Structures are given as C-alpha cells and as structure tokens.
Length: 274
Length: 256
Image 1 (cartoon, each protein chain N blue to C red):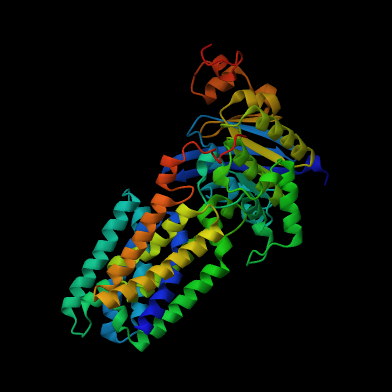
Image 2: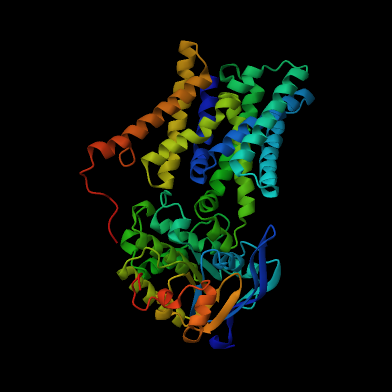
C-alpha cells in the first residue's frame, strides 16, 4: 500500500509536469497515440527478457517517427494519421499477447497494477521518472519557447527539430512510467488533465507547473487510497479524482471558470484598453 | 567598411517549392544597412515564404541568401535576424508574462541553460522602455491589447539586438497611438543601422515611411525607391489587375 502510494505519487508528479507542455503544445492526441503504441513493445520485451521500458520506449518513439513519416509523405491529415498508426500498433500488441507464451496479464498492462507492483518495476519507474524530470528541468526554457513560438526559436539558431524529438522521447518515457500506475488506456489522462486543470487556474507558467504537479500528486494519492479501501480499480480512482479536480477548476476557477462569468459579469474586465 | 556599403540582405535568384508547388522563383533582393523596406504583395504571393527563407525555416531549392555577408545559419548563430510575428501567429492565451517573452530574445546569447545574466536583464529593460511597456512587464500576455502585444514582440526583437528585423503585418489591428510609437521606433532603429523589412498589404503605410519597396508575386516584380516602385503599372502587376487608385488608398476610403 505505501509502496503503491509512493510510486503513483512519483509518476503523478512527473506526468503532471509534462502535462503542462502537452496541453500548451496541443499534443494530447499525440500522448494518446504514444501510450497505446507501446503495447507491442512491452510484450516483445517481456518475451525476449528485456526490461519492459526498453521495448516500450522503442515502440513509442517508433510510432511517433512513423506518424511524422506518413504525414510528410502523403496527403493525409495529421489526426487521421495518428488514429491510424496507434490503433495499428495497439492491434499488433493484442495479437502478440495471444501469440506469445508468457505469464503477463494483459489487464495489468491495459489498466495498471499499482497495488501489485514489483521491486524491479519500481526501480525502472523511479529511474525513468528521474530522467524525465531532469530533461524537463534542464531544458524547460527552450521547451517553453518551442511550445510558444517555434519560429523565433528557429530564427535565433535553436534546433527545433531536436527539441521536437526530445519532447516526444520524454513523452514516450512518461507513458511507460504511467503504464505502471494507470495502464495504457488511461495514461493519457495523466498526461493531459493536470495541465488542463492548472491552465484554467493561472496565467503564469511557473505557477501552472506547480499546480499541475500538485493536483496530479494529490489525485494519485487520493485515488490509490480510495481504491485500496473500496477495493476498486486504482487507475479508475486516480483518473476520476483528476477529472473531479478539473471539473472543480472548470466551474470555480477565479478567472477562467464558467461560474465566474455568470455571477461576476459586472466585475471590471482585466483586459485593459491600449 | 562603412555602414552604407554593407549589405544586410542579399538574396540572389532564390527558388522555394513545397512538394512541387512553387512558392517563390527567381527572387532577388539586396537591402543595405539602415533602411526600412516594405514587402508588398497579396496573400499567397510568397511574402511569408521569403521570411521563412530569411529566418532559415526553409531552405531555398536554388539560389543563395547572405545576411551581413554570411550564410543564414551563421546569421542565426549571430542573432542577426529577428522575426516579429503577426498577432494571429501566436497563442495569445499562453501563460507567459511580457518580461519573459522579451527575455526570449536573449536566449540565443545565453548559455545552454538560458540563465539570464545582468546584461540580459538590462537589454530586456531597455527594450521594454523603448516600446513603453516597462510598467506592464509582469502582466501575462493574455491580458494585453493587440497593440501592446505587438509592442511586446517588437521589444523582443530589440532585446535580441538583431541587425535585420522582419515584421509580419505590424500594423494589423493597431491603434493610432501605437502606430505612431512604432513608426518612431522604426526611424530610430534605421538610424542605428538596422534594416527593417515590413511585410504588409497596406500601401498607405508603405508610402508613409518605407525608403524602399519590394513588390512581390511569386517573384520580385519590382524593387527600389518607394516613389519609383509605386507606379500604377507595377501595382496592378502585383495585385493582379485591380485598379491601383483603390489600393493606394488616395482618398483613404474603401469605396472610391
């Protein structure tokens, strides 16, 4: 139980920080694609005895590279390509599960198994989390500029291609970490919801990061705790708490909540004339 | 080399195509230091393509671009080119303050971790003072008016200390006061030897303060002193045969 709480809080914090970039860059769909595409990687890694994160990472980045390739070489629009590629990878994973003789439980991969997590998995997850956090902290200004104004980044000689793939690699790694706690299906919530909640609450990136991390950690702790005592799905509980926090922000956020507009429409507007 | 001899932008017969669609062909352009140049053309005439080529976003399939006498990638490293986007080109709800946006102009001069030094802070402060936004430095850009936002990005270009400024539709949705302030700034920057290239389809602004004009429609149709370029024949060439008196806005009304 304590183990589950600690590991889900760690993953929650990391995914919360990353979710800020995902929401600002508009990469929610990309997060969904990457998380689903790692399935065949996980299965294959288990089958040949590698750490599952290696396989997951290869397939996560591979799916993104394929999306980029198909988009560039054909006339098909990006959202279609994303939908096409990740379902293809996911389907391959399902077939592999039924064809490889292994003792892995598909439901654990799909929906997480944080209460039964092994020591080896914890080590991997902590390592990944540390790596992702380090990258996000070291390059936070460049990544922020990349999300905000890639043209300017390019014109002052910053290699935006490298930043693009850096952020995608980090996304793949975070998806692998999130897979442990909430599973493939719901990991996209970890990568989007905290950022969206925080975005409604503030107009400053620093505060947004802290709010996203905070809300994500709180959701993870509260979710695991609830699931333990009510004997319900931990993944479901974590994401439900996250969604609940989002709804609260959506309704009651001081500046961007919908109720503020309804009841306080007579308040002076902060947008001043020039 | 004196300033007047130095060529800021030299583009020779550049061609750009996107997957076989030609966006720009055989475009040549030479701009000296210390001038304001209007880049005039319709939508889709290749204005933004030319900007992308000058900032190094796309590589011309043929031809050569030199900025301050060296290659575009060298110019990028030297922080020589600043791009000022149009308001539509940026996410106005992005959670970032005026100060942080202008500080982004200094990133290229900082080390890998982008930790601002005192000199960077001075540059940002000076730039904000010049566009009269110092009082609003902590405000998020979501809470700015269109004109203030425009000035924020102009301040970023000034903080970058670039010698070439590319401005995309700088007068779109800007009130008279901001317009005057910006025009004055442009004259100051010209005096400092910077070269300003303004992309616009508003010809009255071009006539008012551009020394040089470039007419563009998939290629450079004409370029030179504004008074010489602004002939009815040239303008109808650039705008596909529309009556030039309507476009020059002589009577400043739309229905003349």
